[in-house]
Image 1 (tube, rainbow, N blue to C red):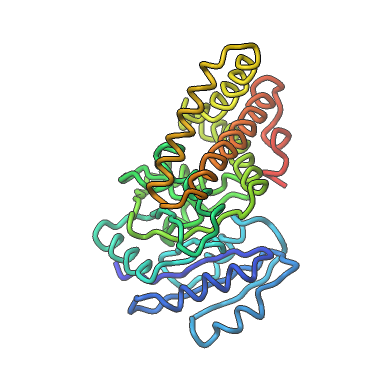
Image 2 (tube, helix red, strand yellow; image 1 turned 45 degrees about the vertical axis):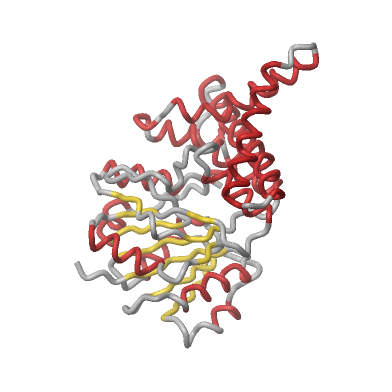
Length: 332
């Protein structure tokens, strides 16, 4: 298959981020032409002036639209694209120079109608960004599920770094209108439509993510709150592992209570786990500050996701609320 890439990037109030991403696209060691589509999703701070800087460096199109969330903005971009394979990126990513080379190599060697790639920490990232990256990607925190497993046919791409063929987009209608979990929903529908997916391990991006603990908590809370609704929408995909952050959080709170009445042993287990996080992060980052922050971001991630998951589960299962009433922001 003769691949022609169209890169779709929704952006919302992040002109400085999109500039870094576009700059990295100009440095690609890729011989073929590729198209870049920027979809401004109702931003107050537009990227128009930034886009102008790259008009002569990239084959770039810039569109503005009313705010509808990232999923529908990606669909908008794919509808405007002229390529036959769409690469979806978040605006807070930076690409290594061989990114497109590795995508093409992966799809040429083993063609699939969708792919996902890992995320990594760039040397220029702040300490907190590196710690957040550790919490999101480490084997000790997420099991490496965001890009460290070799999986074919059932790998679930995430929208910060994924690709989908024109055919798969047309048959699935792309992303849903929900504002959280829309990439998981699409990945599951791709599999339900019998499209093969894969992880292209070498097609990684540097993903900056949120820059504060408060923002990271909010992000992971939304992830957790969306998961029970996704389980209801796709009932065959529910897993016991989705409960782990909630059980971890409740167990830690219970251990603190026990410690206050003179039974510290259970809390010691959490201390051992966080010590392992510190050691592992230090080995990976060779920085004691990042290692210490990694223990904190791990707790923020577990409590954020766990509380969000519990809240939605209670509202769905016990209170009998609808999907929309359970998590209004997901559908707003």
